[in-house]
Image (cartoon, rainbow, N blue to C red; front, side):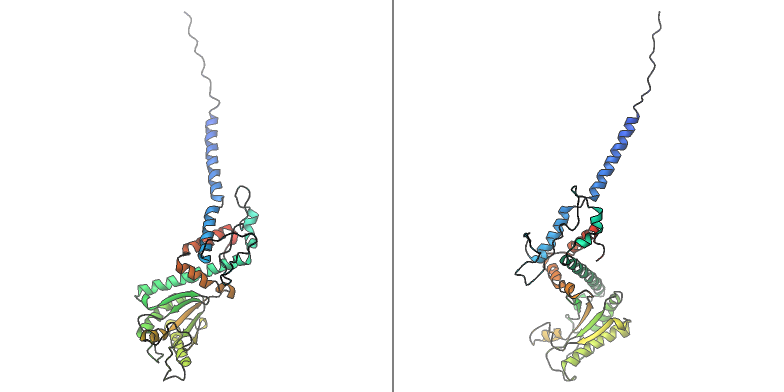
Length: 310
C-alpha cells in the first residue's frame, strides 16, 4: 500500500503586510491629529470677533463694501476692528508660515490700537482684582470704589465710612487702614501713582481756599504711602482739585461726605489714543455685552496668529 504524500507547508511571505498596514494606520491617525490642531478654527475666531464688535457697537455689525470699520452716528466711536484676513491661509485653511511670521505687518492701525487698548484694560483689571481681594481679606472692600477710565485705574476712598472730617485733612482711622492695605499690592506693580485730593463746596475756615484743603488731603495720603509703607517717592505724586470734581450733587450730608475724598490713580502709560478707548471697553464690560474672558480669548487668538506680545 502506498504511503500518503504529505505536502510541505509553505512559508507565509506576506506576513509583513499586516505590520505594514498597522504602521500606515498609525501614521494616518498621526497626520490627521496634526492637521486638526494646525487648522485655524475660523468659526470660533469669528464668534470672538463678533461678540466684541456687538459689545462695543451695541448692535450686530454689518459688512459694507468699502467701509473703513467706523460706524457713523456714534460720535466717532470706533468699534472692534474686523480682523478677518489678518492671518493668511492657504486653500486648505492652513496658515502660511511666512504670513504667520509677518501677520503683524498686515494689521491696520485701528486694529493695532484696539488690541493695545484691550491689553491695557486687562492689565489694569488684573491690578484691580488683586486690590479688591486684598481689601476683602481685611473686611474693607465696601469702603473703596474702582473705575477704569482714560487716566487708568481710579481707586476712590469713598464709602459708608468717612475718610476725612469736615474742613480737615487729617486721615481717619479707616482711611489709614485702607491706605495701609492698598500699599502692599500697589508697591509690587511698576506704574506711576497719582493721589488726587478733593473737597466739598463748603468754604474752608482753616485753609485759604478748598484748593489748599484738597491738596493737603492728597499730601497726607501720599505721606502715608511713602513714610509708613515704603512706597518709592519717585513713583507717586499729589494733586489738589478743590471742589471742582464732585462725585455727588447737592448739599445733603451724604453728598458732602462723598465729596470729601481722595482718589488714587494707577496711571496708564499708553498713548492718548489708546487711553481714550479704555472707557468704552469698561462700559461694555459693565453692560455685560463683553466679558473679560472674551477679551482675553481675543488677545490669545491673535497672538497665536503671530502677533506676539503687544
